[in-house]
Image (cartoon, rainbow over all chains, first blue to last red; front, side, top):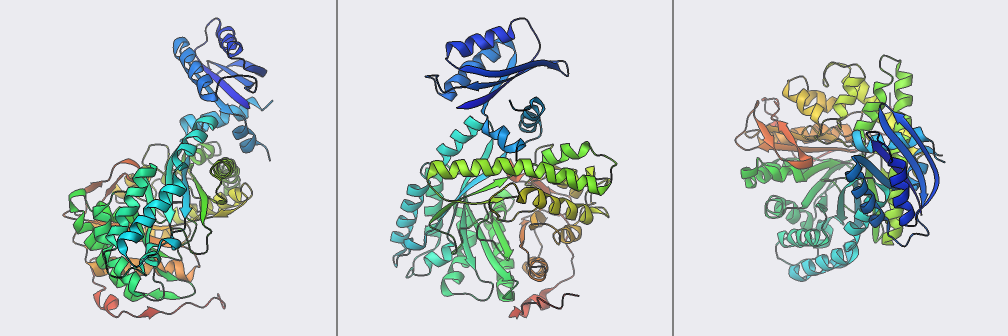
Amino acid sequence: MKAVMTVIGADCIGIVAQVSTLLAKMNVNILDMSQTIMEGLFTMTMLVDTEKSEHKLEDIRGALDAKGAEMGLKIRIQRADIFTAMHRI
Amino acid sequence: MLNLADIKQTVDMIDHQHLDIRTITMGISLLDCAHPDTGRCAGKIYDKICRRAERLVAVGCDIESEFGIPIVNKRISVTPIALVAAGCEGGDCVELAKALDRAAKSCGVNFIGGYSALVHKGFTEGDRRLIESIPRALAETELVCSSVNIATTKAGINMDAVALMGRIIKETAALTADRDGFGCAKLVVFANAVEDNPFMAGAFHGVGEGESVINVGVSGPGVVHSALREVRGRPFDEVAETVKRTAFRITRMGQLVAQEASRRLGVPFGVVDLSLAPTPAVGDSVARILEEMGLETCGTHGTTAALALLNDAVKKGGIMASGHVGGLSGAFIPVSEDEGMIAAAGSGVLTVDKLEAMTCVCSVGLDMIAVPGDTPAETISAIIADEAAIGMVNSKTTAVRVIPAPGKTVGDEVQFGGLLGSAPVMQVHKESPKAFIDRGGRIPAPMQSLKN
């Protein structure tokens, strides 16, 4: 399943490294990513594929929540369909 | 890759603008639950609802979690109970209401609608028994919602039913006096009721519907309001265009959730209801959208025009985004459930008369309005008659959900809590329409041609 991850919060060293390491451990493949500082906040968007992961989406979300709490970030993972539906005709 | 700005926009809508799916409502036919013995009938109703809606809440929660979009309510609507109960020999209809309540609790939904009767042209024995039982049914159950259709464009207005409903509303308020007449918040009187409305308290599963169906109601006043901030001071053409674009996005999300719920539950998809449904939360108000268009306070001159534009643009934007649009589909203006309406009514700018004018151009009617507890039944009936006339003549749905709050008067406030919010008690006219209501009979159906 393709999902969109958004990571928003105060910038600090190692966000990309820690988040992508966690995804790799859970066998989640990163298809695309982009990162910027928007309105003073670290903002990263990733398109990921959970197909090869043995973990359920809710477990992946749980692990990301814990990582987010640890680093002071809001990490969200949602099925990509919702964005496609809302923004593509 | 999806556009970064699009993704951010959606996340912002959910996080900061209260974008959500207001309700997934499963309609269930109970026509096959009729039985001469009321107890057996109640048992069949309970069993069928629990069987059909067993997974509704779990599936709703799964979708919510996977798509990251809040689904605020999971609800059930059923065949108007007056039809199911018509075959019961003796017994008390309230027993059936209690079966609905138990089933709703077992399934984990937060409301069940359909303790209803359709009497726009006349009463059957079953209709009368059910309507008479409404006050007790609403006082003795928690989750059951009731509605009565008293007029249609094709049949006219059943003024006997209008008179009866004034008394029923008063009685319902009296039986729930300890909670400011809360029972009345679960009772809607309709003209031109629709069969596939997913919103409470007026939802029921129409007789033209199939065995079971999934209808979805979207929301999003906060999103529309936020979009309109970007076009402040611009001409109305741009306002309409902005609302349309926003409504399109909101509805696409509703359509996606509806299809997903339908597939997972193995129940056909019915409609997406395009109504803009507010909540008492700050930033989720229809009134504030109208004020964003340039009105100092909702209810002042210009409000009806602003609402007409909003209502039409929401439909135009939404219609292309969904395979099937239905239900009530329009902006809701429930006073107690809309933070801006509460403020406007509290300041005295928004009056019952202005609300009535507003209902000419939007769904659904005089909704969640608290009136003084000593308002006579015939005044409430006359309010219903006026609203029904608007619906009947304009071929649209209108409704009345008023709460004559026992012991309260103008200036007081009633508190219902949660999505139902709070409402300032509003002034109604004191001059009596008693002789008018006492006439009874029917107001004939209106002309549908020679429209000038």
